[in-house]
Length: 90
Image (cartoon, rainbow, N blue to C red; front, side, top):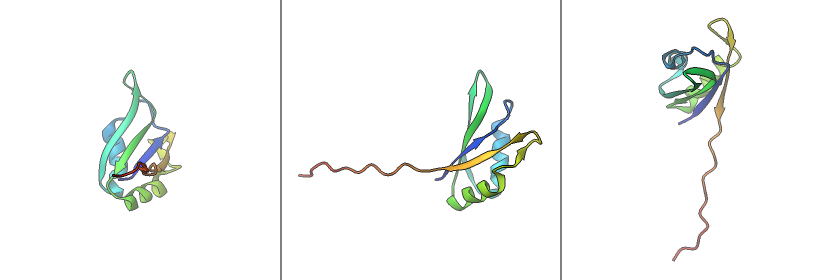
């Protein structure tokens, strides 16, 4: 499942607000807003069910304004390559 980075988030942003922003593009699995002392520190992550939905969200939301004050930055986070096991087998 694709994971998106969302930056430029306001300090008082609620999880529900970020989820509603991404829901029109597809099913949102999880939203994680990074906080210190209860305030958003400007970024979070959104996990979506399908890659196509995540790509649509990036195209539609990146470089747009949230609540007419904050410019969003939305990117798909590349998945790490699989760990290969080269240990000898018996």
